[in-house]
Length: 166
Image (cartoon, rainbow, N blue to C red; front, side, top):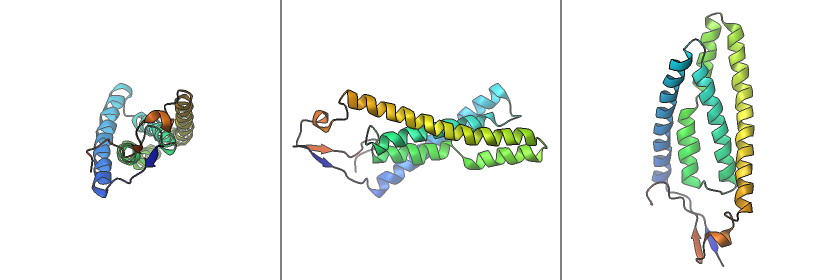
């Protein structure tokens, strides 16, 4: 018989996961923003739109896998969802971009940006969830998710090992 032991990571481990994820999310957003702005210009907030929509998709994907306890343990979830994606996506940047467009009298573009951000974000969440559900079905089909195939030991430790052990 295999016993599942699910442990909650320690507070320092959780904080470190969020801190490190936030660092990488911020750097990724900055570098991607520079790349997009240099390719498409700064006249419209293409960078913020793309970053927020891709972040919504990845957030839904990771959450779906984590909720199914598939590939994403508690520390990885904090690192990716709270840390990385929390820093990668920014509502404040969306709001600022929209306000600046309105302030410059570009209200049709501001409305388009707002609509694309909302519809794109919702569509991205639906896509991320669908991709996560597809991965879960594939894993079940291949029996990767089966606890009996995951370990032949009497004990299966579900503690996530992304960072150094406690």
